[in-house]
Structures are given as C-alpha cells and as structure tokens.
Image 1 (tube, rainbow, N blue to C red):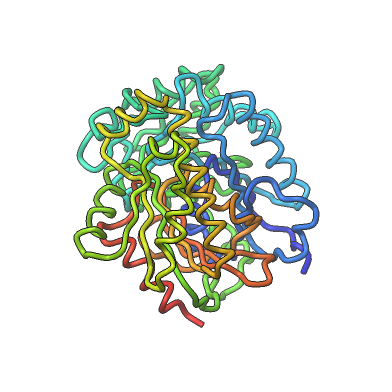
Image 2 (cartoon, rainbow, N blue to C red; image 1 turned 90 degrees about the vertical axis):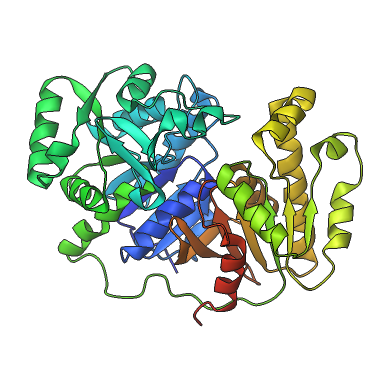
Length: 428
C-alpha cells in the first residue's frame, strides 16, 4: 500500500521522544507510523498513515550532524506531501551547551521559508510546565529537578528564553501564559507583535492541557511547530476541523504473543524506581556490569543463557548517579554508554533469534540501540500504556514484534509489569 500523502511530518531527536509524540497523535485520531531514521524508498509500500514521525538520534549529536539529519528527514517528509511539520525534542529541553534545539529549529525554518515558530516543551501530564519562560518539573525548577546532573545534557538554567537565545542567531521571545489563557486569537496577536520585533522563535508558556490545546489551535496554519509532544495535543483537531481525518480507532492493532523481555539502560530516577520495584517483586533479573563488559568478559552470552527460562526477565544496567559517575570516571562517559548500549543491542538481537517477540525498553539511548540491533525500520503506534508511552508493533517483518520504548523519565513505578500485562491483553 503506497503512502497516501500524510498530513503531518514530524522529526524527533530521539527514539523514545518519537514514540511519545506518535502516541499523542494517535490519541488525537491520526493513524501514525514511526520510522527508524530517514526511510528508504523501499519502505513506502507498507505505510498508510495520517502522520509520520521520523525518529533520529540527534539529541546529543554534533550540531552539524543534527542539522544535516534533520534536513534530510524534512526533505523526505516534504516529498510525501506533508503540509505541516513538527520538530520534537525532550520535555526537559535536553540539549548540549551549543545546541541542538536552536540550530536545528533555525535550519528547519530556513528550509521551510518561515520566519516564526513556537517552542513549547511543556507536558503537564508528566509534570512538565512552563511559566514566564521557566521550565518546571513537577514543583521544582528544571535546574533543581535532577536534570542538572544528567550525564550527557545537564540542564542548569531553567529560563528557556535564555537557553534558546544562547543557541540561536535570531531574537528569541516569550508568549506568556496570560496570553495563552485568553485563547488562540490572543496568541496569534502576540505572535504578530513578536514578528514585528524581529523574533523568530518564542518560548510558549503552558501550565495545563487546556493551554496546550489553545496553542495547538493557534498553530493551525504554522508551517513549523517545535516542542515536546504535549503541544501536539492540539494539532489533530485542526485537521479534523478541515474534514481531513476519518472517524476510526487509530490505535487498533492485533495482539502479539510469545516470550517477553525488559531491557533497561536509563539512569534516570524514574527508571531506578521501576527497576527497584521489579527487584522487590522477586522476579527474574540480570544486572549488566559495564566494567565486566570493558574487561571483555562474556556478559552477553551469560545473559542469553540466564534468560532461557520462559518467564519475563529484566536485564538492566540502571544504577544510581553515584554509581554512574564511578563507572564513568574509570571508563569515560562515552565508552561506558557505548558498552551498555552495544550489549543491550546484542542481547535483544540474540533473544529475537531465539523467538522473543515482545520487548519493553527503558531509556532513549537504549531504545535507539535496541531498535537498530533488531533491524526495525518502522513501527505502527497503538494504545497508550502510561502518559507518553504507547505500545508499538514493527512493520515490514514476516513475524512482527511488539515493542514498548520508554523514555527514562516516564512511567509509573510498576511500569515494567504494567507494560507486560498490557501487551498480554492488547486488543485483537
């Protein structure tokens, strides 16, 4: 089946962020497919969607590479007839000191010949809100939320206008919550004022889903929208008002049975809690030791041997920040991360060969490594398991896989068990 002119083309800077965005679009009634990287021509045949999300691995890439990959994704989406484009980044605005959010957004603006776009990472359902340009995680400023200690993208400045301005060539402005609360017409008036002042990117406040819906409505005719997945909540309704969406269950997918595994590489506090909950339950688990991997010990073979039992097993490298720092001090941050990602990817590939067909994966970098190791090229997005985390199924495989890709910061404490139960009972 040929891809039938998707309405929205989305570019996400990591894998779990891509599934998060796709989840929002599906819940809004848009049939959504996620591609792993920029698709090849051969991928056109099985695709049929209202929205396509291209998942890149550009969040921590060098700026020039992030721009190049994002523009390649944009060109592919443009060639498929998309009429609106969304640049998705993390709801905690994760970026390096020199980018990549500002440089990529400006490159997309130039390619689309548009002089303005909002930047709104807010996602109240997961505790991320923006007020007066400052990002809060639950009741704490971003700089006091734990993100200031992130090993790859430490966020020590909560004022996003300042953060984005430091990454951008043009002037950055603010659309305050007082304007957002008054509705789309007032937001458009504020955008016109900012444009006249030479502003090309503007942080948009949002402290509730209602704010996000108003921002979405204001962006109905915007060629480019940037932000976290939350602001996408208001975009499907624009297409529905134009009669471009069918009234169907966009998330309906068949059930996939077979063995299951949980793979966790995230060091976030949320994932640490999820691993701890699994261990307290007494279920099977195998902890990866990066120092053992560095020494060349046969850790992957040991894991594959350990997981021969039929019951689901947790394989994890998740540990406290103190432990992460200790390992990084011995191996270096890049090598430690590469060892863990490589091992989890090899484990996933080995388990698939042995018949495992259901994978629950925690962590953005880990998710990227696993989907690449499994050779996945595209995923159909299904029902939500927890805010920001949907079930997905692989496309183009003779034997499709059920795959859950969870951002490190997302999910309830019992998420791993919840995800497995959800896959067991997925609608046929």
